[in-house]
Every structure is written in structure tokens, then in C-alpha cells.
Amino acid sequence: NKERTSNGEQNLRAFMTMIISEDGVKELPPSELITTSDSESDSEVESNADRNNIKDKSKPGYYSTTLPWLGCLVWPMVLVVPLILTQSPLSYNGVFPKSWYEYKADERPKPLGLFLGIFAVAVGQIFVLIFFYLYKHGYLGPVPKSIQSKGARQYEWYEGVTTHLAQPEGFVLLALYLSITWMFNLIPSSYYSFNGFIQWPETFFCLVLQDGVQYAMHRLEHVVSFKFYEMSHKPHHRFTNPRLFDAFNGSMADTIIMILVPLFITAHIVRTCNVWSYMAFGSLYANWLTLIHSEYVLPWDGVFRLLGMGTPGDHHVHHKFFKFNYGHLFMWFDQFGGTYRSPKEFSRRAFHENV
Image (tube, rainbow, N blue to C red; front, top):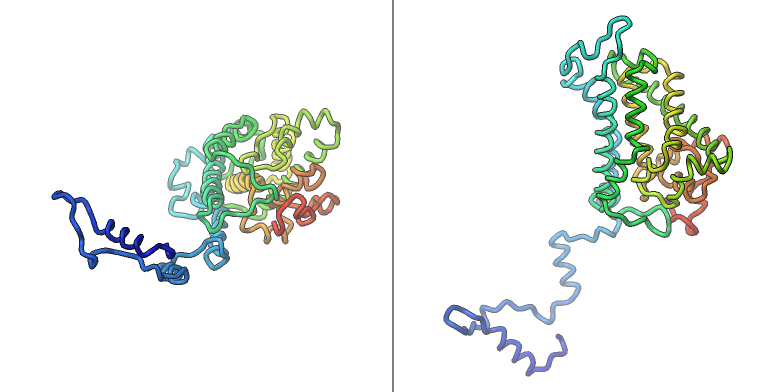
């Protein structure tokens, strides 16, 4: 535009001063025209953008480094059902009739605790999916970094959600296990008690013990025999670059061996939980297991790794190389057993740096 000839400028101005009106062609005086001066520089455009508070999200700043930490709210939200029903005006004893949760001697289990437990996991999953959608699509700051250097797998969100929730070896089998063990009185009697609040020591011990037994079962699946591995765990290992929605995508045998058997063992070792602790443990476990399959680095990963807690980067090491990081929620058992490898050891070659 700056190299236009004088004749070209005159022709363009003459054309721009003509508009179509109801009466035909009307000429406007130059004073009514809105024009942009050729002398307006790029720096002036940038200063106008600054004045309008237009910022580049890709540049690190307060917004891009602080907003993703709002995602940490997902952790209390996965506990929202037991927290509301024990520590709010909507307490369970003001919502449900006593006959629904109080037991007489030798009375058969009532389904309220079972329903609330499954509901707690489902509500937790809703909040995890809301968080992950916002985080993945850049609504909580910059678009997150993929863990593996070749990038995250591409997929349609609807396909991912429906695949995740509809897996028969996932939440369907888990709900069936909970229903059978609850209704047939196959767990300790304390688990049916509605008295008290979430017992945090018991909840934490259940998480650690569950992960410890799961670590042992996971290693067995890999080393007993190739046929056993092929029948049980190999279907899950077809995902060498997993996404969040692959968490429960495997086989029935894999879920039974690596999730349900440890759940049953844990319940019969930690025999003092009440229904709220069991509920909190179940929701934390299921939703944490989902999050460690994320294809992106999560805001809290650095803190978790310092504490030896499981992160997506740690679990991607297992999916990529098969023989390391058998733990899920905690890396303590791998560190003790000599099977832990940090994702930093594979940076550039397989993973992005600082994942």
C-alpha cells in the first residue's frame, strides 16, 4: 500500500467516496470518510492493543502461571459427596430417614451406603472431566504441554468420554463388585456405619495399601508368563502413548486381578473404616487412577513427584517402556523395589523436558 502511485491513490479515494443509497449513487465529502493513515506504524498498532488489554497467552505471566492452579480444586471436589453429607447443613441424618441407614442386630445390608458410594465416584468423575476439558483446551491458562515428545494423541472429546464411561471392564465391573460385596455382607461390619466423619488416617492407609497390593499384582502380570500377560494386561498396554480416557480400557481379567482383588484385600486389612471413609477412599482412588493416564502434564505434578506420589509422567514411563513404574498412586514401592525411573531420564528421546 505504501508503494501506491499517485494516480492509484486518487482512483481509490474516488471509488471510496461513492456509496449506494436509495436515490442511487451518492458522493460523500472527504470529511465523512474514515481512513487509516499509511504512516501508522506496527508499534502504534501494538500500543493500541496494549491499551485494550490484549495479551498474548503464550507468553508466561501471572495469568498463565497462576490460573492452572485453580485445577487443584478438583481434589476436594472428588470428595464433595461425603463432605456435604457429613459437614454441611445437608447432613445425611437430615436428608434420609433413619430406617435407611441404621441397623439392628443381624439385619441385612441396606442399599443407601452402596448407592452413595457409587454416586460419590460418579460425581468425582464429572468434576475430573470438567477440569480436564477446561485444562486441555486452554481455558485454565496456556494449552498444556504433552508428556511425550511426539505429542498427545488426537481424538474427539465425545468419543473419549463415551469410550471411557462405557467400558464394561471399567466402571461397570467396579459397580458390580461394589454391589455384590456390599449387599452380600462381604466387607467388615464397620463399613456399613454412618456414624462420624471421614477418617483421614484410615482413608490414607487404604490408598497406600491398595496401591501396594496393586503394585505386586501388576508386577506378577508382567512376569508370571507371557500367556498370562497376554490374557490379562496386554490389552491395556496397546496404549503406548495413553490418554486420560484409557484408564480403564483393558480386559476383564486385568481389572479383576489388578483392581478388584487389591480392593478386597485392602477392605479386610483396614477393618475400621466407616461408610464415609470407604466412600472417600473409593472416589479418590478411581479419580486419581484416571488422572495419571492424562496425556498432559498436570499443574501439581512437580509437588507430587517430590512426595513420591504418582503423576501422568511417571505412568507414561510404564506405558512406553513396560518394565518400570508399576505403582500408580505412589512411587514408593517402585523406589523400594528398584523399578522406579523418572521421566526426566527419557527426556528429549521420548518425553518433553521438565514433564
